[in-house]
Image (cartoon, rainbow, N blue to C red):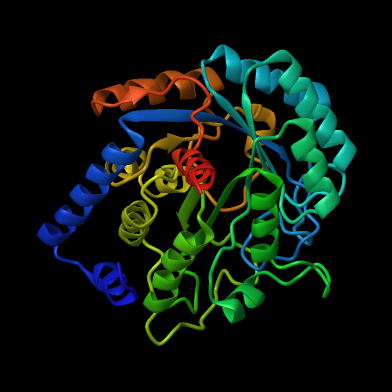
Length: 350
C-alpha cells in the first residue's frame, strides 16, 4: 500500500467504503493470525515518572498521589493472571528510576519460576545494560511506542531526558537485536499531526518489522501543557474514535502478522462497544487490567479510563462473554507473535 493510498483511506468518510476497509482488515486478521483473541494481564506497577511528556497525567511535575507496587504485589498479580487462564502478564509503568534493573530482573525470574507466563515489559526508555539484563532474566517482549514518526512533533510532546539519550528508534533496533518480541505504536490526533504523518507512521510500522502494534487516540490529561493546545497542523488529523479504527485497520493490512490490541483507550471513548469494534477491524489482543483497584485510579495517564473499579475477575468474565458473543474464541497459551515466528523462519531459510 502506497502513502497516497493510506492517506486516501484516512480521509475516507463514506460508510459503505469504510465497510470495505473493515472487511479487508478482518479478513487479513483471520488469514494471518486466526480467530483467537489472546488476553494479556496488565499490571500498572508504578505511577512514578521522571519524564516531562506534555500530555501525560503522571508526568514528573504532576501533583498526584504516587505509588510503586512491591515485589510480592506484582507476583500476586502474575499468579492471578495464570489462574485466570491468561498467557501473558504485562508490567507497565512510568519511567521510574525506583524500578531498578536488578529489581525488575528479580521479579521476572520469580514470575518465570512460578508460572509459564510470557512477560511483556513496558517501562520506558532504559539503558542497554538494563534491557539486556531483563532479557537474560527471561523477559519475552518489550513495548516502547515511538508515538509519532514526525521528529519535530515528537520532540515537542516528549522532551528528552538528556541530550545523549538513544532515540526510541535506536532502542527499538536494540530490542530486536536482543531477541525480544518488539512492540511499538503511536497516538492518533496529536495537535500538529497531519494525515501524511499518520501515513508515515504506518510505513514505519512496516519498516521496523514490528511484532506488536499499539494504537490509541490522543487523550491529553487535564492540567498538562498540551491539554488546551491550539497549534494545529494545516491538515490536522482528528483524535477521534473513527480515525483510530482506520489506523488500526490499516496497520493490520500493512503488518498482517503483528499482534494488535483493541485498547483500553477505545473502551474509554466507547464503553459499550469500542473494544468489540477494534476486534472486528483488525485487532486480536485484549489487555484486561490486573492492577489492584487501590492503585488503578492513580495510574491516570489520560482522563476517565474505562473499568477502573472492576475487579480482575469481573474484567475476565465480562471480556470472555463479549468475545464469545462476537463468534471469536479465547486464545490459549502465550500467544507468541506470528510476525516474530515468521521472521525467524525466514532468517533460518536464508
